[in-house]
Image (cartoon, rainbow, N blue to C red; front, side, top):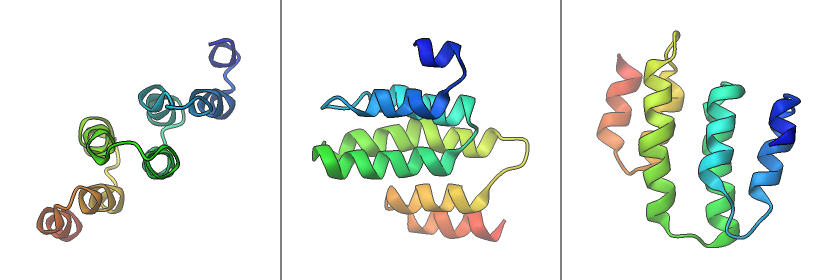
Length: 101
C-alpha cells in the first residue's frame, strides 16, 4: 500500500500479482481505477488465469463484475474493449452488437 500512496500504480499491480494465488481483484481495481486501463485489466486476468491455473469462473466473474461495467460507464465508451471482454465470456452475439452500435 506504500506504493499506492506514492502513486506507483504499475509497481503496486506487480506486487499484488506476485503471490500464488495472486490478489487479482486488487490488481484489477488498480488498473481500472487508477490507471484507467481496461485493456491492462483484461490482460492481467488472462495471464494470471494461465499462470495459476485458477478456475475459469473466477476470471469470468471478474471480467463480468469489474471490466464490463468499467467499459460502459467511461466518458468515452470503448466498444472494442467491451467486445473483447464479451468474447472472453463466450457472449459472441452481444459482442457483435456492441461493435455495431
